[in-house]
Length: 364
Image (cartoon, rainbow, N blue to C red; front, side, top):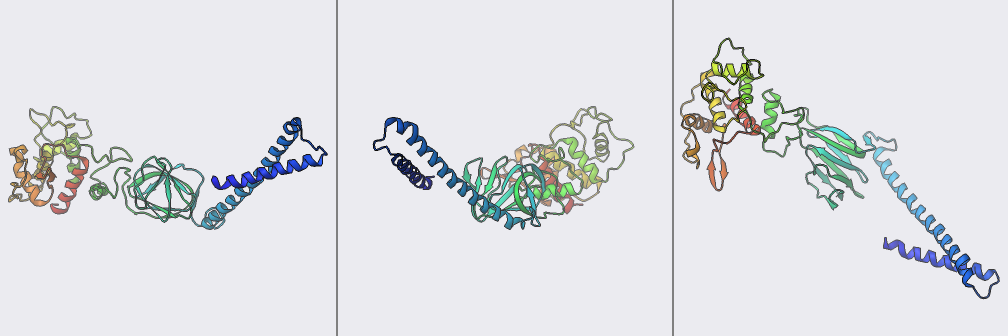
């Protein structure tokens, strides 16, 4: 702004001199107060406004020509240039691995999903009011603007993404196979297991666009997955559970699991379908699937002596946990420097996807 003040001051001074010359030409040797108020100052202001307006118009025209030149270079002067163009930041659907490249003046707004940004100059996070480093992950619901002499490439990392893009952009195709989930990203440790489970029809999302990886798996869900893994066989007779309605979506899977000895319920004739499946329960069901449904030898498990929370592991779950550890189906986690199994904690959907991938690849 400062660079415009000095020229504008010169414009006003010139205007005043012009008005002064105008006054001298009128024959007045002594300028009256009324003349200053009624003629001199209004004439100076008018002249200054006209001159400043002309200068600003020229600046605007120069800037518009520059933007049109940049736009024409991107689009080839046709509005698309073999690429794409969007007038607004309207929400659009994107998928895993797609790369959207924008030039100076382009903008984008990530609504759902995840993506990373690489650029050659400056990209402004307008929402935060700061520059965004190249290589950074986009922040949901933040609006970004590509700066001068900059090319920016946005790479979609989640299975699906919802993002608005404004301006001209080029698009590189993404992965042929991908999940439809906004909340499963290449940056997540569970990305591959969730993709594995989804592609094989073992898992679906909690809705069309969300897998909800951190949500605890319940017992009905896991039994349905195992039933599907076995080919969804029909069941003629099986033990009945008081809390499993015959018309429920999981009834046949639970009946099948009970008939195969994969589950015996939670006691007193109940299966507890909506209860969280704990990590030791999950391991026990996989163990029973391998030994009783498939008839495999599951003896000779590994040692559990290195785990600091063995006192929390139920006696009935020890053989199954020992087998699962030896097969690499489950592993411990470091907790305050100690290796733990966390057997009583509910297994998340992401953890179950990981266990199932290992089970399918190493046991089936």
